[in-house]
Image (tube, rainbow, N blue to C red; front, side):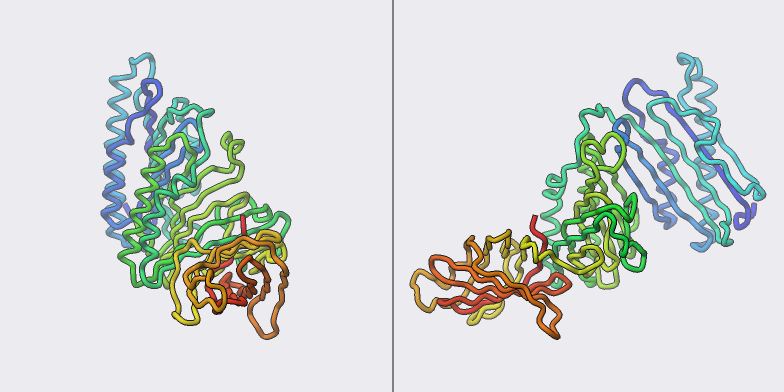
Length: 471
């Protein structure tokens, strides 16, 4: 049979009548088939979800084409035929010998071949089988030419099992619990030279229409580009020279995500996995708190994403929560804060925070600092939690090692845009019992920020960090 031009449509469908609440494992013939397709070099995708509140849906999928090699495709088609034949044999035996069980079947099966002249192959829902049990399983494969004359081949396999959790007992996905498991691995990776992490704040307000074309932003998992959306979280980056370490981290985080959803069947999730490491590619490992159905009443429009995206410069990992329409700026890999099409921060609202990563001293050079130091403004109150190395000029109570750690009302606050400069400047005056301080913040469009601190009684000092919107 000429596989290049013939349209082949095979469908193997099986439903299983079960005891009361649980189902058997996915069909082993199909499971072995997917392993053989992976061994042939095809990328096997897997999607697992419990968003229907009463079942867990397992889906395996493989995209194949002649462009990937004729011999490999022919071998794959032969393997699929063999697997479907074995399933057919089991189904036939079941119908012959087990139909007497209370008038029900253990397995129902249908297999169809479509000729090249049949342009529209029937969909699964148009088949004669009626799935009325609490679980079912089916697989299908088609191979044809699309309207552009290119070969299109797709294998899909779905198996559903009873969730064993009542809808009223379902809970939103616990972002805090999941992130607590993955943080040690991310923190270890950030110790690599050139690796870094930074907060992200991407907001798109409802009704804002000037930034909804593909040239200006990239949209993921959204019901509508004109709906409001807010993404907040962290972007982690590992340079390309650490590919081995990045691959290992990818596998570790994927394993943690899989273990978490397996152990928390009462939390909503969608979990994605592919057998291909993220070089190159875009991979979403977990999506939670879906946007429709029963669960929407519990957590409307709130999602958590763990996304792996590889670019030439290295691997980016996005760990973020989203409310409303889920979207990302087109240049997400270098944008930390983005509001309605603009690189902007709400500095005029006096609600911001700068996470500090480096300090530059007058006498001791530059030092990398731990990520828990910050400068935060909330309304008329400045909270300074910054390290310090320098000499105190007057007061003996001002030790060189005592940090700039205080929370005081702001005496003056001024923003300006210096000419020929690519930053916005914020000047803040504040007074404590020991000293008077003048903070100069230089905020760049990228979100990077420099903090310069002068006082009456201490050496000047500066800091580098990233601004985020305060919660």
